[in-house]
Length: 465
Image (tube, rainbow, N blue to C red; front, side, top):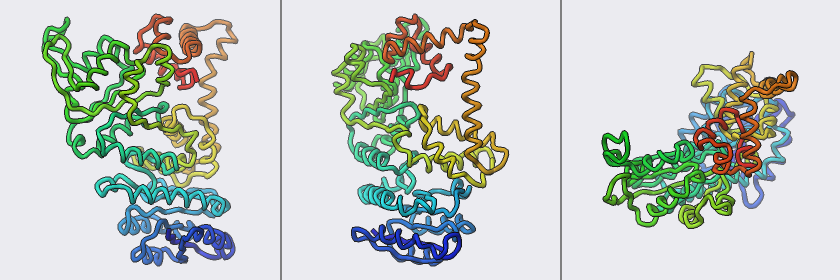
């Protein structure tokens, strides 16, 4: 691997003695390092040599970052930039422009983190070299397609997405809320040369009552039931030659599971009220945030269907297991919020990043974005700090417990609290089995999911983990 290191001697740290330590690490295992002290000469080197990454000192780049980034991107839109900082402030420019950004590292952590970053760079470059030419456009130093992150776990997921998209195998995507299951399905569809020319159809099995889900999937003929005044094709027919994504497959009834199994086996469907079978050419991708093996043991999911949908499994890691990605996700989300809401952000405190990396976010990327929206909204200055984050989290925590505190003071529980407690207790006792919970609580699955969302019950309560 070849590396380009651009640094400015004598600014924050006299003569930058850390450069020697960095160079030794980069030169291990046959690596080669080119040193330069000027961002313009760095562009010159990058125009004639093929490098695995450019390591940039923020001291010489901060006034020219956008200009440098744009010029380097024109030279090589896959060339990673690693920026090392002399202070604890990440400049807002990195939020606004980050297509080539691979990582940001404080100066005092650079040598310590260098070896791990080299390992990730090696994986990134391997991914890039394995990718067909038409897939390379999805790859960038900070992510893949709609995904942000270059941790070892995410690069492995990108490799799986790439491999499976060249096949027609059935895929089962697992992972918690907010990890990007539908994004995986859409990306697999978009990377498939033939199927991407046709429709991507998505359906959440948990959001539609059982008696309606069948007609949504299979369609119906005129007169099939009261109100069926005309025939209507179902999702399977709409996805003909394309891809159908069935989210929350673990909440599909056993009756419908049997019908889905037939579709997988012989690729035919029959509309409700119809007598003719229709052939459908579809790729089926399913997803769940539940443990299907536990559902099989409880008799709520068919083992034969599990075998058919779990041909290629892709498991999405929660943010707590990919903390390195939180940095890039934070910068990307802030940049997006800046553009959408015209909210200027001049800097992001490194301590805020560390705090976010230590948070237990059950909602994963969705929750991270929610928190950052509040931080930006509540910041009185365009500098995002650890204190603002603490204020946001404290306010949220106080709001969560305010009504509960009043309940104890008055010794009277409002109906909503009783309802919320009943749902929490049922899910805990039944180990997150929603089907059984709906039976005991005498409530439909759709209504139960609506109330879970209403009361902001996290995935650990919902799943009984």
